[in-house]
Length: 301
Length: 273
Image 1 (cartoon, each protein chain N blue to C red):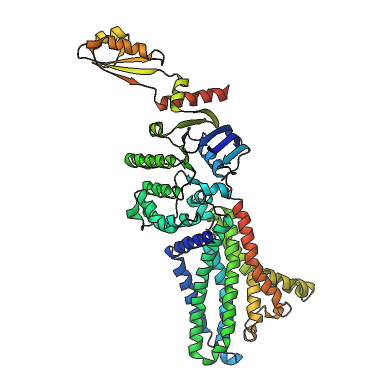
Image 2: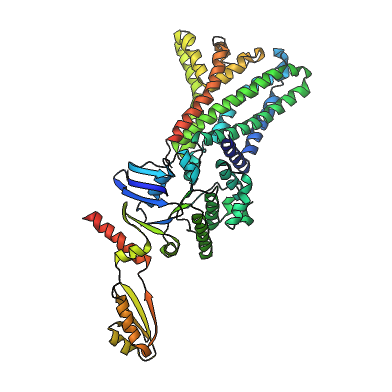
């Protein structure tokens, strides 16, 4: 069951094409990461999904309704990048306001603030909050009323590593309950483990839309094998494996996906000389730059 | 309705925190007290009760002060949300833009009612304590109160429209001041000049009354002065008031807030967050 469907979505601002025939879908319970450089069109895409701006052409369907329609807005939660609130209101008052707008009882405000870890500051003005705390108020309002689609623009910016982990745990729960999640992020390593699919935008063009494993296969980027030799055997190991030596004990090998098992066999054959071997797959950063670059070249030709 | 009330509650809280409520009440109270203290002199000459005379002074005060307070509260309504970056999020909620505006409108109107009520109440108390006969002026005071709210409502609504058109608080403030100057000060001066030049011709007898009706501030003044015999003496425009039907004047005061809210909603709908 798809919660969000985009097809051929195009948007042009003045003379720049912000989105060029972008199309993908997010199913219920699916977590999709939207990646791209600054200005790649991520925020524009999100605003179109939310109905804040209209696409020039193409179709968008949100929970079976038009984006921005009351029916769609009832089921969609949004966390803007650098979320802002009125500094004169307390966290509690601000959340009570959002609860009322969604037709929920304002009494839940405290529980929501406690859930995101700022219950202690509930009665302080938001003007006195740190950026991380404001971000948490933003998260709290996005949790109101079991949304079916969550659109999160850089949701973990301003959060410390522990809070990020808690945040993703919260997202896992929501996805398990059937919420579709579309999030953008610059922190690729955290997206890597926490999302089901990755959509990469490059200058408004969608250059990738797949699971991380499939993208990895398609990119066919070299895999690194890091072999740790026993003391004194580094040179012998380096010669035997025809690899480069990094320091006194480490030997670095680079191979393609298909060669990986053969190479590991060679390493195993050296038996006594080897202390340890580590397989390092291409990181999301590598894959991301591979596809963004491919998109750049595609758009220039 | 819950959504309108939610917006109104939040807006009222903000106004209290920003000391707007306190400032508005203090402003109206001080001016009203000063006026009622000064207003004690002409009573004997006119033979009217103390309170009716005070009402005449308060009318001249309100025509300047109420639109000013209304514009000061409303110019930030949309432009401020854009500037703070709070608008995109709230617009993704299932709430109509008209509902957000109405919420702000209710809160601001309630604050105006508090301020105007406090000011007029103090003035009335002063008049009543001096002259027990002043009780006969209470009707005029009540009329002044609700027409002041209509006047404030008109300028609140126009202020929201300016705020949505300007999109930046600085520009909105500039527009609000310019509007106040034009509609409250220059409008009457312009009409006066036109009458002098016309020298009792067609403009003065036919067109001029409609110009008075068209401006909510002049309509407010006309309605309060024409309805009260005693106050006619204190009014420059009262001569013309005789030629305009009170129903037209009242209609103008009732229509302006609605027109203003309509314009504000239209302008707000054109804002892209």
